[in-house]
Image 1 (tube, one colour):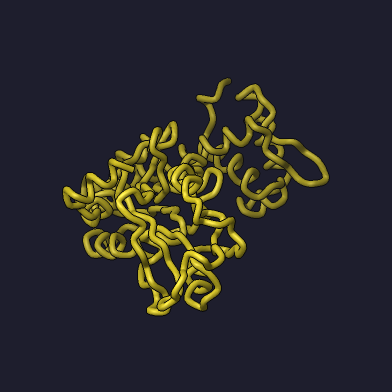
Image 2 (image 1 turned 90 degrees about the horizontal axis):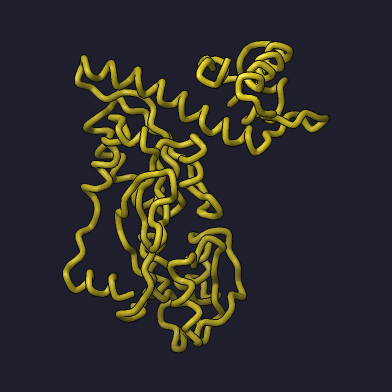
Amino acid sequence: MTAADLAPQELRTLVAVADEGGFSAAAARLGTTQSAVSHAVRGIERKLGVVLFERGRFGARPTPAGERAAAHARRVLRMLRALAADARGADTGEINGPLRVAAFRSAALHLLPPALERLAKRHPGIEVSVTVVRELGAGTAGEVAEGRADLGIATLGDSAPVPAGLVGDVLLEEPYSLVHPAGHPEPRALPLVDWTENCGSYTRDWWAAQDWIPAATVRAEDDGAVLAMVGSGLGMAIMPALSLTGAPPSVHIADLGPRRPYRRVGYVTTPELAATTAVRALVRELRALRPRPKESEKAQVTGV
């Protein structure tokens, strides 16, 4: 027997063990026994011809092959659910079913809500769940690639905008600005307040060329904390536009000039999910809200 003989229940078992980190916890999640889960995993490993989990007192840790197999299993199970929802929708004309979205903090706060509001009005049968993910390492795109999310709102690079194996598009290019306490006479003399997710590869070259920017002396958990610290007079910061939505009057936002850096924000999904009705419906709403830059702004973006 081969991987083609794997049944949906075997895929659910594989995912449960990978997610729960042990056979006992997976059995409780699946409503079965530990021995049944262990037997099922051995059968899956025989079919695939690889060891999927390291067993020990710590439980069951996925091997690299196990992590890859679990990601594929999540995506296959999601497509089975999409198959049922799309087939029913072909009869009724309605779009129903779950839609899992991963987004970094400022996108979840300021970019997603209007799109989800429009989506709910047009397609009330879509059940959206949003997970806020730190945009570090694999970030939101990693959640999609691992099968934990159907669509991710992600920061995209310049040379390879969409990660390999995924599809997507840029939704907006947001400028960075200098943010400092309102009324401060020498904002550039203030210490720099920063957070780990800031300043990706899209801004590093610009950042390194600015001799007036000191090393960060104050570190915060996220962009909301940075904004609060700046508003309290603790320093200045360089932040992208989404993070500055609804900024308090205690801070002043200053333009960094025509060569200011930009951050590209877009959506990513898998090739197979891109064709499903729920994902397509959300992408339409996101694109409908995408700002259309003026010609002068386009020139500035491409010049950076």
